[in-house]
Amino acid sequence: MDMDRDPGVERTSKEVAALAPQWTPVSERAAVGLWRLPRAAEAVERALASEDPALRERGWVMVRARVAEEIDSGRDWTREAALWLARGSASWEESARVTGDLSWRARAAGRSALLFLSDAHVASVDPGDAYGRALWHCFLTTLRYDFRCAAIEEFFGRGPRELPDLDPYSDAMRVFALLGRSRTEGLPLLDSVVARAGDDDKVVHALLHGLWLGEDLPDQADRMLRLLEAPAFAGGLGPEALFRKAGALRRLRRYGPALQAVQEAIDGLDPSEVVVHADCVRERSLILADRDLYEAAGAGDRTPAR
Image (cartoon, rainbow, N blue to C red; front, side, top):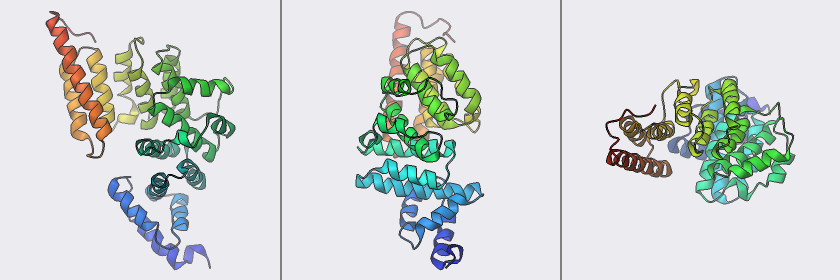
């Protein structure tokens, strides 16, 4: 029977097309249920093969739900993610988005990608194809979430010095590691990555993360604020970006705007984002402590540094 005319595939495909295109707890629960329908895998493949971006995005919602079940089961979810990203011929942008979200979830659940991936294995796969790139993204993103800058540098140091075909998100991981260790050679690389992919939020968030983590880099806070004006944030700043903005403004002693930014971040958080909420509360405490120390030192009437 022709798969396109199979009643099971047709029914499930219609249900997939009716999903919300964003990955939320609600859409995930709905997607998990759809995986129980007949010929679900074929329906997902059909969605991922579509030229309609909205339908393709719904296919990735289904993939996230499938891999989330693997995470919860304790099995090697990185392989499942890579297989589906390869089956869907994922672009590097799609791979970065899907693996970034799943890596965060797995880490929070005690199922870190590092439990399943070794640096030697990841280095042995080709980051130029969708499967290998997905493993690179899972591995490097998890190292970034763990602040393992030295491990990222060591990973890149094992291979060729120049990787001209490496995707911008993987390049951003290398820049994150350099900036996170306060190494100024990361700054021109940052500018290069922004020129290539300043419209991708996953890339810009990784670069912001590196600038936020580093210490005493030239024009560090101002660079963060300039990054927050990148095309990736043309639609406005989300809670994570506002959190970074608050930190940059605190470093510039612009305490009023910093408090406003961190409060906007808190107000915009989803109830499930408890880790980011805790980060924002700590940042707010730092802003208040810095402000009080600055004023106690008699500097309250000085013009804040910019």
